[in-house]
Length: 483
Ligand code: GDG
Figure 1 (cartoon, rainbow, N blue to C red):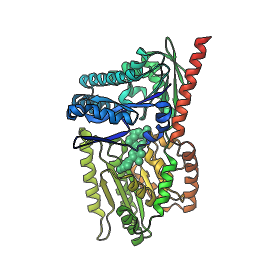
Figure 2: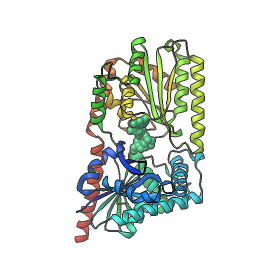
Figure 3: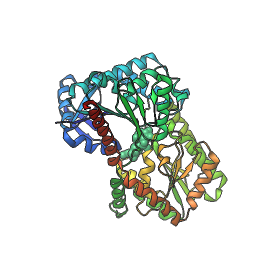
Figure 4: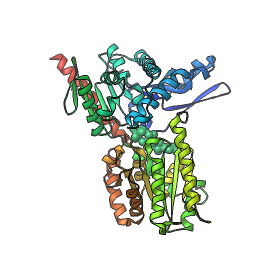
């Protein structure tokens, strides 16, 4: 039976090993939800790293781990500590991530990282090739695996290969400075279909291919010596129904069933009914513009002191890549900024910023989305930004104002949000005021449009569109061959 193999850096499951027993729980991220139908249909298989470092796993448990993984229709790629440091922390997160988000000064060009990246991509290729059967389709995800399409295509030209990039593709002027630019492009061109969140990323990629490799490109295709590669944009959506139904249930909680966080948030609203809460949620990452956001909030309090005690920034920063130098530095900067601003403006009964440095259970995330009147999302660069979409989906009564950076891919589809330049502190400060003062009728009008779009183009539709396109490319190729 024909099947689709999904390949991503991490498998969509969490393994737990306790007293020699191995169990797994599914992870609930957007990608796992979107690809659920592709994964479950026709005996699909998901290939990726299972989250365990090879040296840490008792050799007697190796087979049990793989058995548990297999039960979830998954197969593991095993990574050693060296692999993880060079491939994941190194090339992926210390070279590609900063370069593709235009933080060129943060990028490290190391040949050791590159060698590790190549080696690990080959490890992935080996597991994929072991599991491939004639006529199968492979869908590869994200910047950690950009060499994999070519590694598969070389060995199995008969197999249909798709690739989706979840982060921006930078402009040619930035991309050309990477020492391994040709190899990365050739790696990607092993795919039959390459997808991006927006048309801008797509055209940056096309321009790099034509100027670095010299291939002929059109609006959305690249002509190689022996085949044509299709390039297209597929803006990733969210599981709209899940967010809106959890939000509805959340609002029906009673005093006794509310979570502690929900109680605190509601208590705050009861005490100061005219006060507004501004929400900020991201992984703690320098691309997300968290420091600028705090500074803009400070500017807002300075410029509009009438809002002192009448507004609060609720900030959730989820720990991420904390082994990388820049992330450690950023954490320190944010701790200091929050401390300074709370020290500067706090009154006996009010703290301007509530800061949480941790990840929260899904239900608490919903508590935050439903209770904050404004969401302030100001990345310096962001491939898409799903938090913006989730916030709007959770506003079941259609109130709430989204302030969104123009530099997030999501801004292309969310024109009704208050769009800002994340480097313009004065503008952000003024926009916070505009958001707080926006009449309810205006809020509802804007959210209505955004909700209907998010509902229609949800994450399942995104996955379906990509797969349909890949299938149609395959059909066309077969027709050409039989002529
Ligand atoms: C990359 C690209 C692109 C956050 N905190 C908690 C939590 N979350 C969930 C959110 C959301 C997801 O994590 C974050 O997604 P984003 O899209 O905002 O950002 P990245 O992690 O940087 O993702 C990005 C995305 O890939 C998809 O292509 O949009 O541009 O950088 O779903 O809800 N979930 C829970 N607790 C938390 O504390 N449970």
